[in-house]
Length: 102
Image (tube, rainbow, N blue to C red; front, side, top):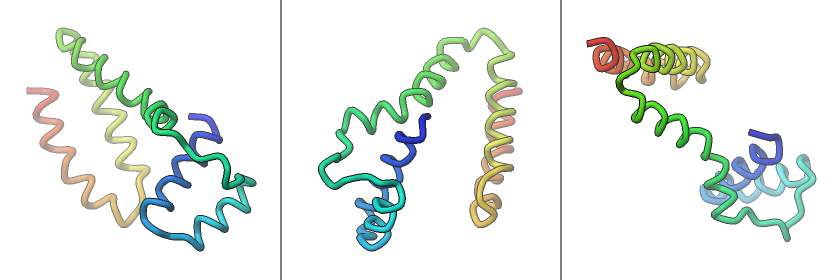
């Protein structure tokens, strides 16, 4: 994702959660004006890469390397997540491991 996509995603999150002060501060920092709302199509495009990867995994079930690569990416993502979330996220690794390798 590009920097602008990340900024729009963060801005959308702040709006949805009602963090108006944080939203205003983020707009000042990122130099985003109020007349640039993020359209639904833009929000969906932000997640386009994730969806494409999932579709690739489901269509390539006959290739075991896809499962290995995907599990390694998931493990890396969990290891690099926030400390407060890492313990909860790591609980899903074993069931996913079993699904991928058995």
